Image (cartoon, rainbow, N blue to C red; front, side, top):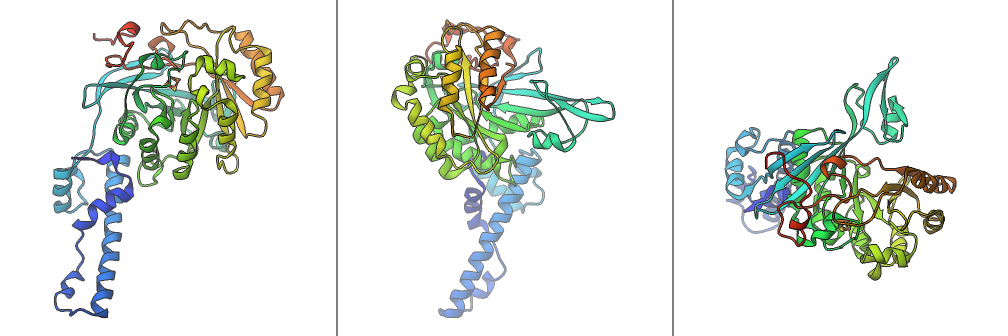
Length: 420
Ligand code: SF4
């Protein structure tokens, strides 16, 4: 059985091609071998390709834009096509084991896969719109306010209704567990169980979109996306397809711990946005908390970043998890500023979210703000992430497979489902 969500539009059109019927085929019957027959054959082939692509678009619209998952309801498709799809292609669904909402609006979902393994995805709301005077204004976590056309420029959804979210980000998983073993991350404690297939990645977004009008996607859930780069590329193609999920490349961000060959591979096939989990200002420091650094040290990683074809007005986001008394000094801030010189970048500081899988502590607000001030002074756009969903362990570095089989799972049962 083929999973629909594993097919990009061209794959789907290829599958539909043999089902094509065009009226010119009848004329072939009486036509002898020769030039005329060959040119008719060519014409038929071209028509069938066009027809298959049109059908692929129709089906994409039904599933990704109208959220219809029953072939029988796709009424503008010929019955024969629907029957064939029903027999051969499954529209994959994830089984929602539970969903829990944080006090700040963040929603965490636990999904069960067909092999009983589980993954998590999170919806992070930001920039609530409200009416101030005559204007509808969206306010971001850092206090900046946007209205009218500025809203769109700031990368927010420019639908000017009050009492709605201008940005609703889906944070999705790429693997069950993770092999990268970053010392500050709960998923890293689990180890890797398996990588997700393209259809399992795409379906996380589809399921979330059936529940909420998602505007942005970040691959910052469980797993190292570039350790599963082939499936990530396929999933990104589907997410960006204008007949599919139709996300802009600026609104889909792949975040990596620094798998250099994966960065190169990703940009051969797609041009989504990139985030690098930097977290240190020296190799010595980084290797202590991120084993990946031993293989691809900071200089190599930043070299790969310099080669990313960013285009105009695009920047790479560097994430920096701040760990108390480890990487949070003034000297660290100055070193980070020097490292990023020449790379169009913005820095996102993430004060550590404490959890039972790591001994690190969260730095004080003053330490974080001092660090930020230095980077701002050096000309880097630097934000401090207001962590969302900490009360339900949905914040950065806190995701894991609750019922997974990976190592460490039982030891770290912090979060209990509501109805357990
Ligand atoms: S931070 Fe990311 S790459 Fe590192 S262990 Fe956690 S999930 Fe894996």
